[in-house]
Amino acid sequence: MVKDYSTVWDNCLRTIKKNVNQQSFKTWFEPIKPVRLESNALTIQVPNKFFYEWLEEHYLLLLKKTIRQELGDSGRLEYQILMSQAKKKANSVGGPGTINTGSIKNPFVIPGIKRMDIDPQLIPSLTFENYIEGDCNRLARSAGIAVAKKPGGTSFNPLVLFGDVGLGKTHLAQAIGNEILKNFPDKSVLYVSSEKFTNQIIESIRNNAVNDFVNFYQLLDVLIVDDIQFLANKVKTQEIFFHIFNQLHQNGKQVILTSDRPPKDLDGMEVRLISRFKWGLSADLSAPDLETRMAILEAKMNQEGAELPHEVVEFICYNIQNNIREIEGVLVSLLAQSTLNRREIDLDLAKEVIRNFVTQMSKEITIDFIQRVVGEHFSVPIEQIKGQTRKRSIVIARQLSMHLAKNLTQKSLKAIGQEFGGRDHSTVIYSCRAVQDLLDTDPSFKDVVAELEKKIKMTLHDD
Image (tube, rainbow, N blue to C red; front, side, top):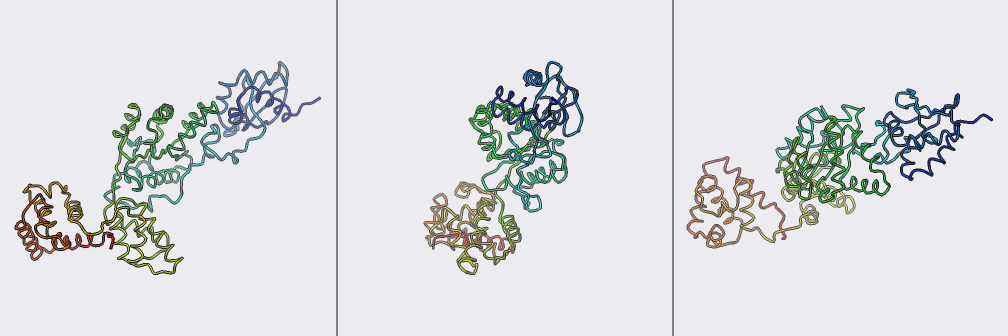
């Protein structure tokens, strides 16, 4: 009786399934496809050379046993590697019915699939083209562009992007990944959050498939891990990531990480990992200035096909200073309110919407707030504005703060003086006169004061 190659392989699979755990069977045997049976030699097709070598190293004896059961002592196994269509003879055996890489939906836990089939997990719309550049992110964006042009080939490896929530770290990291795929379509790029990465490790440990997991990640050309700080105090996860990082870095592959703080401040992280994070470039993303925030909002408006009055754009950007995501959220809310409630988008509607985003609202303009706004503009700490320093730049900031406090609050001259280190009312009068003299003689200073007054007035207050 002539044996059919599919039947022979199906019989082999039944034996193999009894001798390996479910996850290993699914990972290493289900993707195999029987090709032919000639001269007592069964040919099976495997996805790539790595897959073949893994079978040879880990399942050689099992494959020998099953093939001899089906074909006798003279039975043998030949491999056909799918990617090159090359045949490779071996002393072992292995594999199941059909290969269907299109049905593999989770690229993280199935090593051995073709590299080109890996889903990068990137959002196509997050690109450099719609990532607005400003002083707050210029270094990080420039480094990202350099990496995208030569992944693994610059001194920016790893590239660590750090900054507070909502400042565009994820957008920039994904933009780098998308640009690499655009420049190098054959490279395997993968974006993964630290939470998903940790969950995958837990799952691989549960299924006794850690080696499979590690081998898959080590095949990547570019690995992007978001929010690396969440690996803190997860000893096993850090250990596995350490080995993956080392292998990728040694092989000249690119690693990109994001974090809410610089590597030196990552508490709960192994010293050896922090040391490796410092090998490349750590680039800070800080809060954008007013002009950059407005440019970001206007870019988002163009993307949404929306138009907002200029005064509304200014109002939004004056009031939301440290979170780009919230600016985008305000825009979405405004458009929804306008459409659903058929209301014109004006300052009143903007105030209503922003109250849902701004957690702390002043009931009135305070001297402390004026000091903060002026201090931020002149890069002078509030302590120095209140202090005794006579340095000219600090004196100007102090006198201007007093001038604005007199004009924008209901406080008496004596109360204002007390807020500036216990000074008396005569000092406040002198400061206001000095500021008025500058306003009368220096047009550029007049513009600065007008801008600061506008910022203070436009910042949201509970009427």
